[in-house]
Length: 284
Image 1 (cartoon, rainbow, N blue to C red):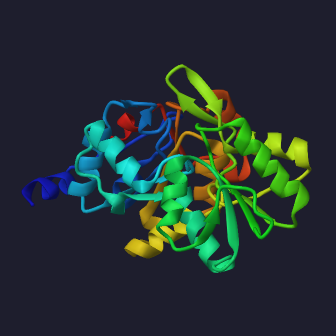
Image 2 (cartoon, rainbow, N blue to C red):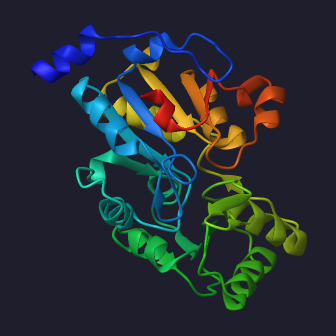
């Protein structure tokens, strides 16, 4: 209690990378963090992350990880962050594109047969929902849903293309990200996979995750925070920053992941962040 009071009494001025006054970040209560490239890279947690999350909590705030990465379930993400040393996080600290897609499927396709292309973890997450799913070619399917899939195989892409070519189905994908950052650089993400599928079938998906404001609005509603109390932190302009701007909340772009400084300098519209920092450590 005394430590929280001390933090509140010692509010200091803050400037972002460009020298813009960012002092109002001291008043934020809901911090929505992207994960890959924002708080860690592959299996390396960035400096300052544990201290920042602790400070948010001591200030009476809440942090939630909102990720487009559909390759892992929430249970998997909790386990990963525990391995990286963030032992206080639990399932309430996450909202993923998988969860967003499940909510959409329940609204639009609660009784339809849904074909999934994704990781084992992605499929297992869907099996818990009670939705009618398959991972094999089935002429009764009404939906095709593609997620980011590091377990990608030729058999999977063959089946997906066959479904989209031969059947009249609704076509969705969890996220439009072109690449996923890893320790040596990048690997193709869901957006790139879907571009290959489009070349083969002529079909484009409806993307579910960021840059749509769906996840941000869902988390604000769940925990009872207002737009002016909320900030989105991420390393991609076209997903993280655009989703925050589309939701009408402040946004912080960090240079620890995909985006380059020159891209931020040229950014306009929904891709222009409110603030820029080199990394989340600077928020301390």
